[in-house]
Image (cartoon, rainbow, N blue to C red):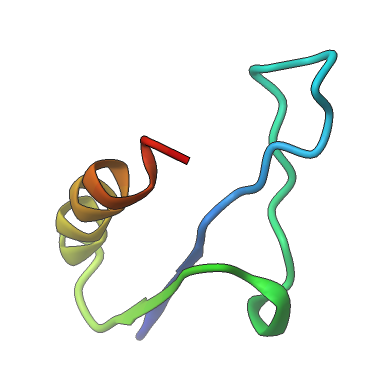
Length: 53
């Protein structure tokens, strides 16, 4: 089994905690892993990389 995760996008400035989950072919970042636990490592890296944006 493989696991897929895309980076959510904040599309509504009036709702800062709201984010949409884009389709894989439209995502700014995408991860495909074999082990679910690897998604947590990816999430940490994305937070470091995209937190400033």
